[in-house]
Length: 322
Image 1 (cartoon, rainbow, N blue to C red):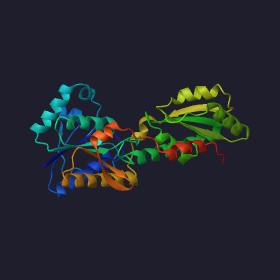
Image 2: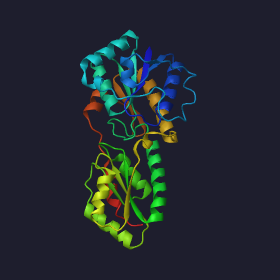
Image 3: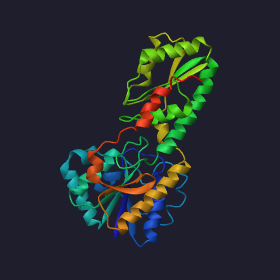
Image 4: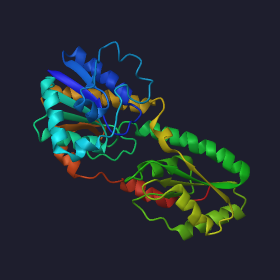
């Protein structure tokens, strides 16, 4: 059986370890393995990547993806392009396409299955917003990066008696923002799932300033608002602090994968091997209740993962004072 691997959509830390674990596991178990560069676009343009036991060495400590990735709107919008990709896979004698990526990549794989292509999807997204898995590859490293950045920003904030509005990724999910806010002791958070009482927040920030608290941190998910918008809003409330903003941006996608993402990469590779051995295709391989779980792609596409009630409830703890 010939297996092709692609990484698609936004990159996330842990993709390279997953490519390494998956390639070696497949070879050890008698599968023929190959890759395409740049996701679905690479299939369309036949950008093959030769994956061997040796050329995936050293990937455990590398961020990014050696296979490269891209956004390919033509694949999403044009049925003829998807038909072309299907035909390329058949001409290359690919039996199963393994897609490593997030929500858009998942939808692309589902579209291919409807054309008769066998697919397995492995969830890689720093936003942790994919239905069918409790955790997604890259989220742990991204949170570690955010925590490190916020801790450093706190140092300079304290030196200047400033409030910093820190913008993190998360178009539709506040997972990164609220998790980072908990881990760094932020005074407030803005996420898509919950309305923040701006007046109440401003009152608390003003009280902190009057008490001589030398910094305050507010974390904002980009899908809720921009750091600049929140800064302007709080400036109008006269909170006392000099207000500055910091947009972490794509730094959240890079970096050496932390332990938990490497372990998750290994588990997803083993889950893929299990799916192949059982001839279980057209599924998302995820982790549920600390065990490998298979979710049909149709179900994964048609359902939305919501922020846990625990994290939503945690939003209201930020008013607790030190």
